[in-house]
Length: 227
Image 1: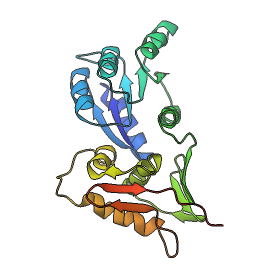
Image 2 (image 1 turned 180 degrees about the vertical axis):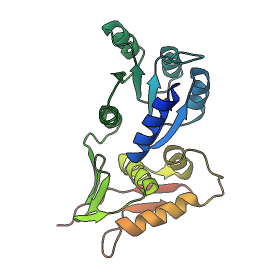
Image 3 (image 1 turned 180 degrees about the horizontal axis):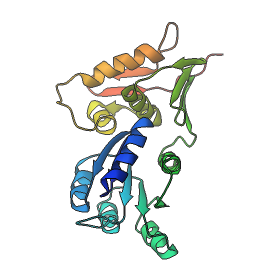
Image 4 (image 1 turned 90 degrees about the horizontal axis):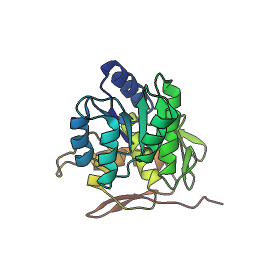
């Protein structure tokens, strides 16, 4: 899943970025509000971690512009302000959660998982597609009880596809959510990673779960458990 962190304190931004990358997220950082609105408007993110106190344009103004433009990406506000009035203002402008500074990274990670569940048909921390299970807390995948070892990019790809199971996902859509930058349309990078993922989740006599849609992209299908 692709997350944007908007935070002007570089140490804090790097702390969040490093932690989220260890949690298998694809992370981009922006240090001011003016640059952030351009990044948000021209890219697709699954969640935004947004500091309220920003140079150029404050977080609440940025949040209002994001929501006024029709973008519904989940947003967690970070701020040193912790009064009830400040929280109400942020939530009324469309924030999905509010975390006062200083905060523990574990709490931020848990809140991020929570808002992603709210925006997904899957409400559990364990994503399921038939006999394939992906635990978004431990970051482990299983099929028929077999633990599947995934690289960071393979995990991000599988998580995105499982959160959108049975939907046809174009290569460009997958790129926008799993990679930081768009690839050349002629690149076969998506196909390469899909092939690697298939080799791990479709072993031996296990039913195929990733379907190729010629000329469009891929779909992760809900395969019925075997009796």
